[in-house]
Amino acid sequence: MAKQKSAFDQDQARQRVLKIFPILVKTYPGAKTELIHADAFQLLVATILSAQCTDDRVNLVTPELFRKYPGPKNFAQADPIQIEEAIRSTGFYRNKAKNIQGACRVLLDRFGGKVPRTMEELITLPGVGRKTANCILGNCYGQPAITCDTHVIRLSRRLELSDQSDPVKLEFDLMEVVPREKFGGWTLFSNVLIFHGRYTCKARKPDCDRCPIIEHCPCANRPDLW
Ligand code: SF4
Image (tube, rainbow, N blue to C red; front, side, top):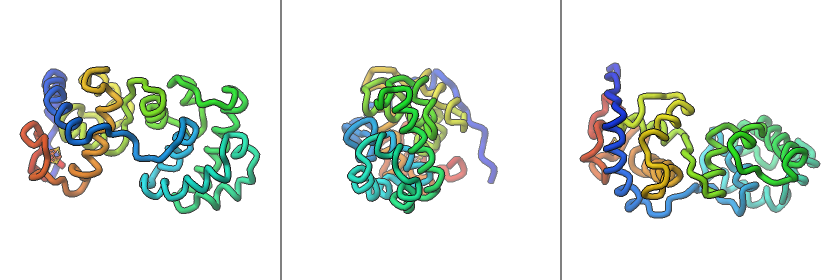
């Protein structure tokens, strides 16, 4: 059956966020990225690896990877084949190795080997788009940042916070309806949505009967809208 057109309304979306945000924060206290990392550099590499791959799979690979290549210089000077071998199980490993090595070279050439702290600079790194940049800005640098991953996109549409499927347009819609700082702000909002998408409001079979925000959800028990 064809999906009905979204009834997206910005004022309603704002009201809905004010209701669901505190509930989700209570349900997933302190939600943050599940990619294991010690600093912004490790999160940068881990997020590049997480494209089309689960966080669990990335977390299996990164401890040994960071032991072997502790910093940008080590990656930049490494044999690409060796990097590919080390990250093979995360999929798309040739492209990811190329991006990691390219990003490390840019870090060394332009940023003194440090991960920059602005969106404009971060997205100049190979393999880094707004999603990765926001993940780093929010989780490592404490800046308000909405990470629009697959869960955030799906849930924002189900909860009628946006009718966009393009992640960048959707991110800008969310900036309009989610408080920048209140309740934990943009960063925590996207992190609790990611947790909710991962553990309850799954892509194929959302567990509406156990959902703490069911009374505020326009899609509750409506498979035709999922
Ligand atoms: S009620 Fe169902 S569709 Fe709505 S957010 Fe909860 S799990 Fe997802």
